[in-house]
Length: 67
Image (cartoon, rainbow, N blue to C red; front, side, top):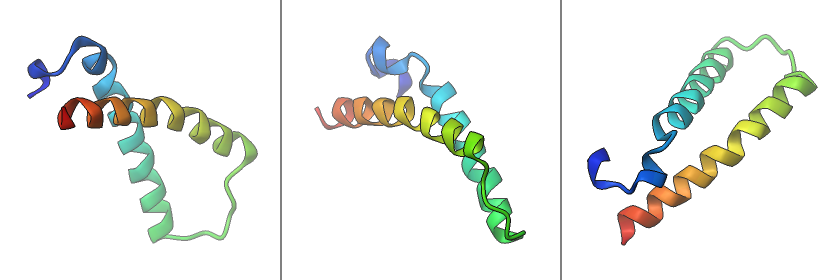
């Protein structure tokens, strides 16, 4: 189905999704074995920086698939 998407959406799609998937897996594992530690300011900053391009790509994909 990737070949049917326009080039702008295909660009970095896998990279964005794999990065977020990796983060979700890491935090899910940490939640399963809670340590009581809070994420550092730097961790939160990185997560927020990764969210913007992920969300942008997700909305592009949604628009393309609903068209």
